[in-house]
Length: 386
Image (cartoon, rainbow, N blue to C red; front, side, top):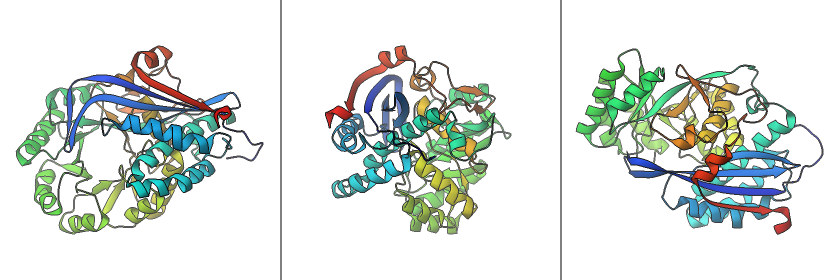
């Protein structure tokens, strides 16, 4: 960030929101039974930055995240300089990741760091009077980024395809990993419903081993799938290379990669065609920017993963607006009030694309009534609590 006076972080507030789901959302590894969001607010100099930390799984993730923020993050960031998000992130990573490794839980540490980092970039943009996408180096003054509709299948396939078409989306993503017969039905119904003009992506949520994935590739190719996301359990680079050697279908991964070194190792592999950092999981804008810049040097395309609230979607859109090679914003097409009702001004979806705000920071504001309606817990720590 630009040089200037130190601006100490004075307050950290963490709010957990929960909204019910009508019918569980099936994934290859389990079910989502409600929508959960962890909002992170960081205050400095009378300005508040807003971020989000991913807590979809497990169902008790919100309890862990509250403890991590209260006991791990707050003592380290209160009093730190809010004008330098990258330095704050390095400090948090240096102090907390060794603990996460010892506990076998580096992912949740990164997810907590992500919420703080997004909030600090939002705060920095508000102070500078610039949108985050320009702080990242983008030059657009009226950005509009393409989006694809995700979350289609294995249930309600026809209705979800119709919702995607009604939203003007030119690409959709199906959820696979439920057995060959069910996956075949999801793909065939989706393709028939959306037609050949709409691009089709697929996500296996790490459901397959290498042999099973190899067997599935002809089925995906027959339905014109453009890329398959997280096809393999663990998504290890060596296994992805084995799959890529046997199939020409492009492979995408990234939502469960943590740390820049791990992203770089993945991007260095010829097996990976598309990299997908999740800003609410993988390290916020600081890591997302580094991944985008490294991908540019490698000739890779980037499509941020996002299964979050309106805050996470807005963050993804700013990353996409900043870089020409960041192709897509992910739009979960299933109903989610924490995506549609959380802001005073809803996100600008139209014609299968998202208008990115040119207002300072993320350019969004929480609707206090919506927050109160869905809030199940809130905690804060101030610089005086240290």
